[in-house]
Image 1 (cartoon, rainbow, N blue to C red):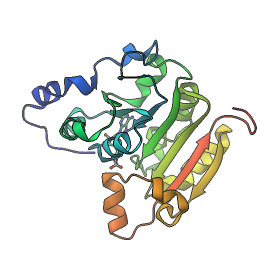
Image 2: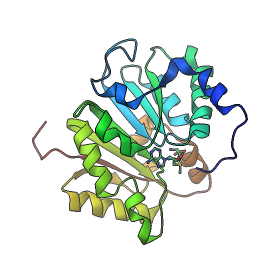
Image 3: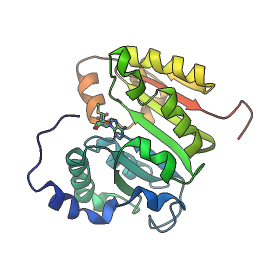
Image 4: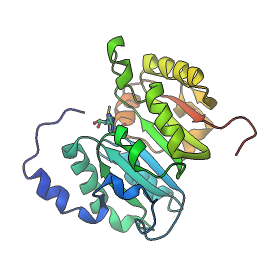
Length: 222
Ligand SMILES: C[S@@+](CC[C@H](N)C(=O)[O-])C[C@H]1O[C@@H](n2cnc3c(N)ncnc32)[C@H](O)[C@@H]1O
């Protein structure tokens, strides 16, 4: 996501410090003490301006959510949104992490996450940029390491090309697609869906939303 550099960005992020995980390496031992209570932990990668993260934390108080974004000025908007809606959350169950998903592998306790969300990830349409796509097998390797057995990768996109690529990567990697659709908003799962900024823009324009739920466990395994 491109954005003009924010004035006072660092100070504005600092004002939201209570919701910020300052150092990804602090997650090496797990998530103890990060939230008001231990709960299943979900991670959103590329949270953008934070609509999904804020909406999910409110709708699912039984889950602790970490929203990650690599562009500090974009995360600043998400953080401010989360601060402004603090009273609407039943639990203190939302934190933000500024950084690149590639840093997770070395810094997050293996098999500690219950769910990872990829929402409207950058499609990187040039074939030479395929390795940058967040569903490239090099990223799947990281997600597999971080998810608990039976944990889910939940992916949404408006981009049919990225969706096709992702399905091929899941299969090549040996991950199992347990559910998929090319029109999420027409399925029974839509009742539980929280829309992102991109999702709202695309669906307002009539673009159907593709989604896949993926597990790295073999069938019958937990
Ligand atoms: C197209 S935007 C979608 C934002 C939001 N998820 C939505 O659906 O409205 C993708 C976001 O992912 C972030 N992003 C891309 N690659 C990332 C990475 N490797 N680690 C963390 N964030 C990343 C970008 O900075 C951008 O804000």
